[in-house]
Image (tube, rainbow, N blue to C red; front, side):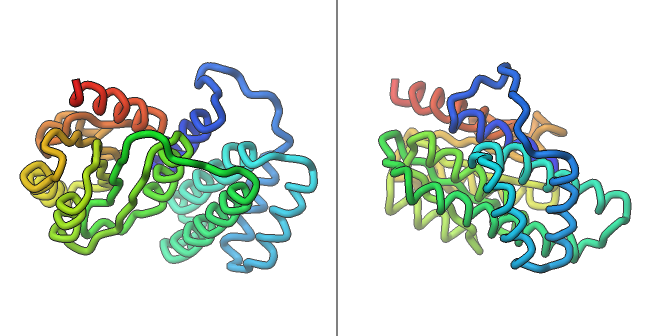
Length: 247
């Protein structure tokens, strides 16, 4: 849940050219709206969710506000409800999967009216093989894509899949997410293989996830060049890393 919170908000700020230090005006989305969406997601009724979001859109609320002030706080609220035993793990998992579907639907509607043409460098974004938390990867992928990067995102089943990808295609940066401690050594092995077999011999590697906020020394331990605490920092770090390695 911390990963979702830290990646959603900065991602949207960068997409829409808003400085993180700028105060936001009142959005029209209320705490009651957030609670109601969380309730609908837990009730597992797509019709109610779609109708609820359509009602909010009818107020003239734009995509940025929907994602920043509705979806992100809803994800955080679901996390709080889980921590306080107000709902169980299965309920939260299903609710988050439905929230992800809603994210795809909203951004797809935006893409119908706005053509996003990648003009920047290429990035491969992947979860650590065996990682089950993929919602953050979807958000970060969208973040990079709308910032102009050519984005390839993967949910690999094995280290070999990632090696095949970096052998076949050149990437300026490869990014990995890790949510817990169990897969740390596997991530270190994957990064070592990426550096060994990458078509780009100067590929940069960044890592992200709450675990690196708790253990910043693990960045070097797994063999990465840098870490990012949120979506905004992930793009900034990648841009800097790409320029540095090319220079």
